Image 1 (cartoon, rainbow, N blue to C red):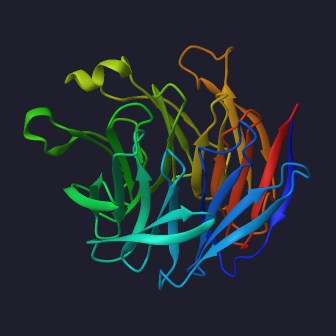
Image 2 (image 1 turned 180 degrees about the vertical axis):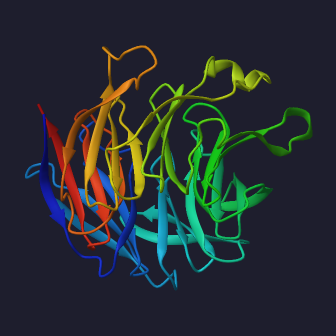
Length: 341
């Protein structure tokens, strides 16, 4: 197997923090599109040319955020883009005939917003920030957003929020070394923390930077400043909405693969998860069918040393028939990769 670099994309004038593939692209003749966001206060929209296969910047979203844009996320329909910024706001952009307009601005966090994520149905949006809080917003008609819950529970800066792929259960990870699981607790319509994954139950021993789910949603992978990648599992995903919560348990810890902070991890629909780290490298892991009892159930598929000239801040697999991997770096570039066997 080889991770082949397809293209190196330049344009941002500061570190690239994050990116997100538009889920409504990459099939039925619709060219793949992704958004990237940067310390240069802008968001760039990139589109693949169907005939040449090459990427070009189609739009630059600027003059809205006045500080670093830390996170970006497309709604499931691909029509709206949410961008979270160190200026304390989250902006909602709508694609109107190829032009992106800022149609709503969500305010409430005391300071830097670190992450934004839509739920699977596009009816809820979550944000988190340095103020240690997680906010849940309901998406109303006419591009209105109403805060329905402010979740306090983390003791430090919250680095990422991620909705479960099939259930309305929210996960957050933090500088306090923990992952928290939040659910709407039935009758009261109030959200609460239903589980915290941390030491001593095989949790991370330093900042948890990111997490990602497999396609079926019964496994989760997390990565940390403790240089490890951990895999977690749950039983009976489908019953969780029926009022019963199935707790998550530690499956295995992958250690020794990165020698600096692991900032990003993402699971592909094909079951390969990628990690990106401050050692400038990307690693790919896959299910290990021959694993020993009690040993890690995942093995290294390949490693790409010096994937970038500086820290790899973010990795994400694309939608579509033939998944590509995109990576974002402190070196100011984005790279698009293809996994070739």
